[in-house]
Amino acid sequence: MTTSNTTTFDLSIDDLIEEAFERCGMRPTSGYQLTSARRSLNLLFLDWANRGLNLWTIEEATFALTAGVNEISLDASVVNVLEAVIRQNNQGTNTDVYIERISREDWLNVPDKTTEARPAQFYVERTNIPKVYFYPAPAAGYTFVYYRIRRIQDAGAYTNTADVNFRFLPCLASGLAYYLSLKFAADRASALKAIYEEDFQRAALEDRDTASVQFVPDLGV
Image (cartoon, rainbow, N blue to C red):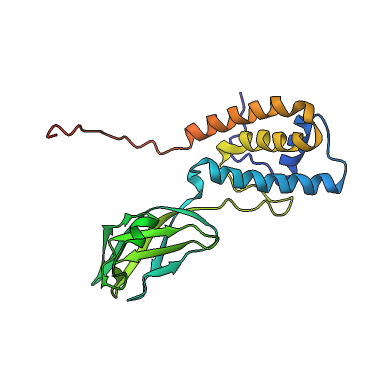
């Protein structure tokens, strides 16, 4: 038996839209329907950001800190900061030290926010332009190294492919079909929603870190 010997299948935005409309029992026949579908697709991406971690959107980033400045602004595409270290370069050798994330209340209760040393804590203000506040304020020579969740890229041109991992393509098609059914095929919405939720759950269960974890009871208590 001959196989294709390829593993590159993907769907362009217009192919996704066509697939979604077919699941609604129709074909797009107007420019408005295409525009509406692309808008729904972008809203679907935003919903995924609210549903939890999407591993393909987790990236490492760095920010060189300025001595005495305890506040930085991150890129607007950052959804959240997962974890971070403070890096110091000493004669060409990088040393990374864990830094603790604290709450807004904890940050507010820091009595002297101008103290300078190696930062040990950080607070993330999740505004439209996310900001990070450090305590103590950094002395010279430190870099903030962090893992961030970034927004899924917009759909853009119809010839683009979606900024999703291949495992989520079935979920993407079923999710878009459900969104479109709310506008163009209300009689199918309930069934399409059930399919979408099942597809998303299946993909989300696979989209996780599979490193082993060991829990050790504290017998000294």
